[in-house]
Image (cartoon, rainbow, N blue to C red; front, side, top):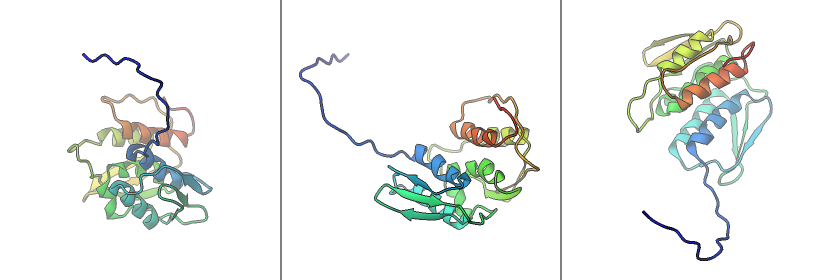
Length: 182
C-alpha cells in the first residue's frame, strides 16, 4: 500500500489529448448535421482517424484541417453516397454507419467491421437492435445491405451484454425515431 502525503501545493496546467473512442463517433455522426461542424482536440495522427476521414470524403463530405488538432467537417449541400467504401472494414466504428446512413438514405451498403486489435468481437447486438427498430439488414460477401422504410421505430431494448458502440448505434437511431426508445 502506498501512502501519499501532501508535500506542497500542486499547481499548473496539463493538456488532455484527444481520444480515438471519443472522436470517431463524433466524426461519423457529423454526417447528420445540416451545418459545418468544427471539432477540436482531434487526434489526427491516429490511423483510425485517418481511415475515418478517408471514408467520410469518399461518402461526399468536405474535411478541412484547420490546425494540428482542429478540423471542419461539412456535408451540407452535398449528395451523400449510399455505399461505405471497402476501407470501412478497417475500423470497428464503421458499424455506426448503419444508423447514421439509414437516417439519410433508405438503402445502404457497409463493409463488415474490422480494425479491432482486441480480437474478434461480435456485432449481433447492433444488427438485432436496429432490426428491432425497423431496419432490414442482410449480411453477405463481407458487406451489410441495409434498408429502412420511413424512420426507425421506437422500441424498448435490452442488450444481453455491454456494448459501447452498440449503445451509440441505438442512440443515433433513436434520436431520429418517431417516438421514445428506452
